[in-house]
Amino acid sequence: MADSAPPVTIALSKGRIYDDTLPLLAEAGLRPAIDPERSRRLIIPTNRPEVQLLLVRATDVPTYVQFGGADLGVSGKDVLDEHGGEGLYQPVDLGIARCRMVVAARADFDYPAAVAQRRRLRAATKFERTAREHFARKGLHVDLIKLYGSMELAPLTGLADVIVDLVDTGNTLKANNLVAVEDIAPVSARLVVNPASLRTRGATLRPLIDALGNAAAARRAS
Ligand code: PRT
Ligand code: MG
Image (cartoon, rainbow, N blue to C red):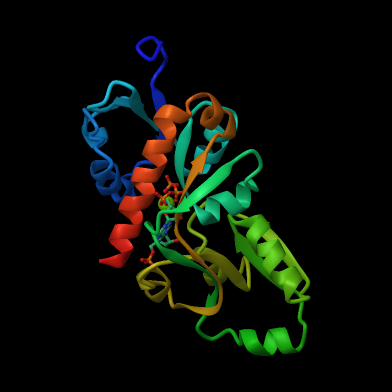
């Protein structure tokens, strides 16, 4: 019975993913019943009793959806690439929370020369997999240093020669006397779906996925 089935759950992270997803949800007819910025609740009901939102850390969204803790999720391509995407269906690029994955260095560091001389680089990042694959494609040897935040400090303190990080406006790099020296990939947020949920709860999920995809496409066209 549809009435007794648990609600379909959409995993989101607070901040830019939530903020950018909200208008798409609205166009799909979904409105959160609570403002998460004014509440400590992690499960947010919506105006439709058969759909609820789950607030998790950005890096945990793929994990929740992969293991069925959520049926749908919205996750940055950066996070998905680190996760690996196993067990996730990725039907829609939502085109939101856009930014770029780059290599950045101090303004006085000659990255092209270091690459040309095939110098062994120290690279600090929280995106280990992305960084490893990027430098491997270039045939460069790097010592990767895993950080969990404030990567900008690494080149300033001598911890690393370069960082691999996300850039949007570039203001954070600029404020720390860093420059982007290489583009790795454009990043945007994707809809991720648990394949088993899609099979068992397709009647609720498919129209929702279509509506979110249409809302994202309309936004891009405008
Ligand atoms: O912040 P928290 O530790 O809780 O988690 P999170 O950093 O994983 O989440 P959040 O909400 O900061 O980012 C969620 C997603 O937004 C990321 O996974 C990206 O896909 C996307 N996104 C888009 C960004 C940015 N733009 C962005 N600018 N994520 C991070 N940034 C950082 C950037 O690294 C820089 O340090 O924001 C800072 C400001 O950027 P500038 O260039 O505008 O100054
Ligand atoms: Mg952040």
